[in-house]
Amino acid sequence: MSTAVSTGAVTPSVILVGVDFGLPHFDAELSELGLLAQTAGYRVAGRVSCKRRAPDPALFVGSGKADEIKLLAQSCGASEVLFDPSLSPAQQRNLERHLGLPVNDRTLLILEIFAQRARSFEGKLQVELARLQYLSTRLVRRWSHLERQSGGIGLRGGPGETQIELDRRMIGQAIKRTKDRLEKLKKQRATQRRQRERRDTFTISLVGYTNAGKTSLFNALVKARAYAADQLFATLDTTTRALYLGEAARTVSLSDTVGFIRDLPHGLIDAFAATLQEATDADLLLHVVDASNPAWPEQIAAVQEVLKDIGADTLPQILVFNKLDALTQAQAPHVLVDMMELQGQSVPRIHLSARSGQGLPELRTLLTAQLLAQPSGVTPCSQAHGSGIDSVAP
Image (tube, rainbow, N blue to C red; front, side, top):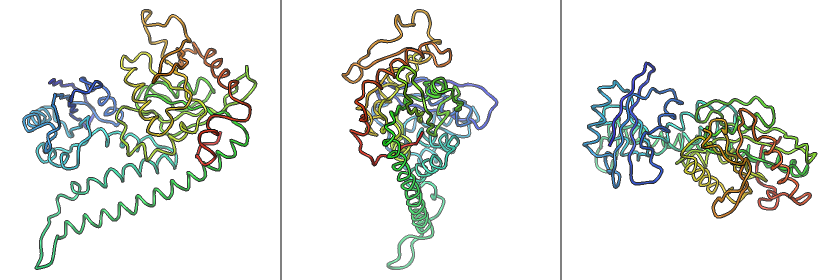
C-alpha cells in the first residue's frame, strides 16, 4: 500500500485509486491514470494503491481502505475519486454513499476524454454511442434518489421504478438511433473502399499506444499539419493522406488512427469499430512504439490485444520504435533497421525520430520494399476482406 499527496491550484481535484490483483502490468504509481486525469482537466490531489486477492463485492477495496480514501479526500479537499479498475454499478453506488463523493472509473474517464476530443461527425456519434451504452448499466445509480413505493394489492413499484423504466427506454431509443446513423456511415465507407480498390491503392495505417508519436510520424511523412501534442489521445479522428514513394514511383494511402491504451473498454472498441476498421482494412500496419518508455513491451502487448479484438492482428506489420532522440547513448540501438519477434513471427523493426527526421529515409525504403513485394493488382486487404469493409478515402 502506498499513499502520496500532491499539491496544485487547478480544480477540480481528484484522488486516484489503484488495486493490485497480482497482474504483471499493475501501475503502482498510477502514472497513466494520472495522465488520463490531467488530460480530462483534473488536478491529482492524492494517490492510493493497495493489494487484494479479489475485489470486495460491496466496496471493491473493502471498508478499511474506503475509510482511508475518505480521510485522504477530506484532507486534500478532493471533489471526486477515480478508480483505475472498472467498477460495477453496485460498487460505484456503494462507494459514493460511503465516501460522500462522486466516484468514477477509468472507463468513464476515457469516455470523457473522447467526448472532449472528437471532432468529426462520425467520431462524435461513436463517443455518444459508447457513453449511452455505459450509462445504460448505471440507471440504478443515477435514479437512486427516487423512492420505490408500493401501492395496493397487485401493484408494484412506484415513481422511482417508473422513472427508471422511462429512462431505460429513452436510452435504448437513443442507442438505436445512433447505431442507425453509424450504419449509414459504414455503407458510405464501403462505397469509398470499392472505389479505392478499383484504383488499386496500397493502404498503410499507423497504429500504436496512445502518445507513442503516431501523428508526429504521420505529419513528418506526408508534410501534414494534423494536431499532435505530448498528451494521451491528442487526436481521435482518422486522417488519411497520400504518400508518394519515389523509389517505387507510386502513391500509397497513409492513415493516422486513434491511439490504443491498456484495458481499453470494450464498449469503446465496439463504438469505434468504424474508425478502428481503418486498421483492419489496411495492407500494412506501421506499429508505432515509444522507445523511450520503459513499459514499451507491455504497450506492444496491449496494442496487439486490441488488434486481435478488431481482427487486424494477422496483417503485415513494421515495428516503428519512435523517439530515438529521447534515448540515452547507452539505450541507442547499434543499427536502425533489424528484425524482431512478434507473436512468434519475425517482423521488420526500425528505430527513428519523427521529430528530428532520423531514420525516415530508411522507413521509406522499408515501405517501398513492402509495396513492391505485393502481387500486381492484388493486395492483402482485398484477399482477406472482400469489398464490403468500410474505409476512409484518400
